[in-house]
Structure formats: C-alpha cells, structure tokens
Length: 360
Image (cartoon, rainbow, N blue to C red; front, side, top):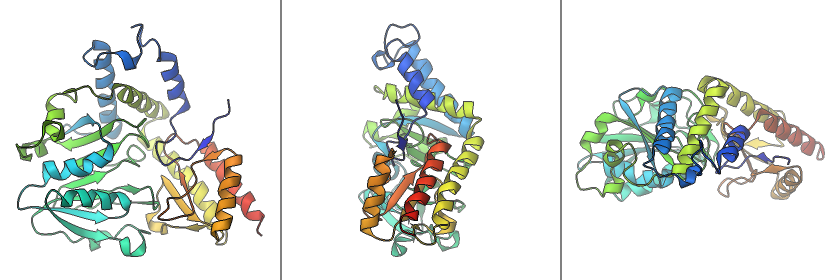
C-alpha cells in the first residue's frame, strides 16, 4: 500500500517501523498468547512495558531524579484543571501567558479553581508571535507561570523559556521530544501523547517531586498527582496499549540517535517548507512572525479563499492529508511532528511550488 503524506495536527503520524512492530506483536506479545491489550496491568509482562516506557523517557529527555514521570488519562485538557487544583493554593495566583487557543482554555479552567493573572499575551496580534520575555509581568504571590510551549493552531513556538523566580509549568503536548530542553528548568511538564509520543489515550506528566508536598488534602483521588506518583501510575487500570505504543515510539527515537538528532531533522524539515513560503513572493503568507515560527506546525495562507480551496483539493488528490488550517486562522497548516518523514516535507514544498506556477 502507498502511505499518505500525513500532516494531521493530531492524532498524527507514527513511525512506520513502530506500526509494523506493533502489528507483528498484536496477537501474541512475547509468547504470552495474548495481545498487549489483553494483558493484566498487574502482570509481569505489562509491568516491564510500563517501566520501560518510563525509563526511556527519563533517558531521552535527561529527566533528573528531582522529577517523577506519571502516566495519566484525559489529555492536556484534564491537565488544565489538575494543574491549578494541585498547585494553586489559597492566597496565591496562577499566572498564564496567552499564546493561543490552548493557553486560553488552560486559563479558563484555572479561573474556576482560584485567582489567575495574565502575565503576558499576544492575543491582540492574533497570536502571530510569542511575547518577549521582558514583557512578562508576574502577579504578587504567584503560584506558578503557565506557558504553552508550541501552538498548533497559530504555528508559533517558544524558542527561549522564561527564567523567573516562580515555578514554570508547560503544556508541551505538541513539541515534547522534538527538541532538547532542560527539564530541571520546569516544575511541571504535561503532554498528550498524540503528536510526538504515540497514539491518543495517554498523557505524560513530568513533575518535580517537592510539588507533591504542597497539594491540598481534599482533592478527589483521581485528580491528585500523589495518587499516580505513589502507585507508579498503576492506581487503576492505565491505558496499557497507549503506553505500550509510547514505549515503541521512545525506542524508535533512541534508535534514530536521540532527541538531538530528532531536533536537527525537525529543523531541516521545517526549513524546507518555510523556504517554499518565503520564496513565493507573497503567494504563500506565513501566519507566524519569523522569530516565533514553530518547527512543528507551519501555518500559512494563500491569496484568497477560492485559491485555498483549490490548493487543498489538489493536495488531497496528490496524497497529502491534514493540510487545512484551523478555522480561527484559515489557510493551511502542515504539522511536521517527529514521525513525519523528510520526504513528505520535500514533496509538499515541491507541490507548493508547482501549484503556485499555475498563477504566475
């Protein structure tokens, strides 16, 4: 079969070799006579899968012993609530930098829990850029500063993180494992898996251990980070198949040479498409300002809506999937997560040039 050029924003492309390995093991995992989906989450076989995923993530991201790795469900959307429920104590204020729709949703949920403050925002510019670090203004008694490291809808990304006298919390759902980051700089990182880590269904939380000591005692059990930390994320049945797929993706990243090699490749992939945009003479217009451009989500518009529809229709016949932009931005979006191959980006850039030639 011919694989599609998958530029979906999420769930998104998975490495072909990972899918093939999962296919081989689907009916009989390690001679158990059962699929991974059929294993007890208390079994020795699954326990090895679970701990392997945790160990690989720690290794690949160089996560220090000061932090723990948790596997949850509910996606980043549940974390919008869990972060303030666990970390926003009475008398303190949750600080948020608004850089797109997901940070807005995180703020909306935090407002239901306690006091909040918008420390910086680029909403007035329709989120074309990341606010300058010097423009971040913290409130008094700040509990934490929350950022969204990459913005899938608007195609912007933090290239330098704030280093202020406050705990830094980051939603890294759409760029975790795509580049090297200093995990010790963050108090908490969370990420839905369905961009770079695996299929939908599992959410990774990387939390600094001392934060667990300040969690209120009256939280519901399943909304308390301590529940997952003390049980190795096995308090209840975890999303076992999603964690298995996560472990395979992490093994694939290691085989590629680790995050440093992945980052180099991602930058090269992005430059191919941005080059096609920048050399188009204005036929393709980027949404994000140059200094804030995302290496994961390339957003751009065409001269008008009619041409955009023609572009998307033609792209579909050529095997390109998921290029329609979000309704709040319009135009097009190419999501080029870790598993999107170099060749797909080259093919898209070539298609863009050929399509433009029809109007020159």
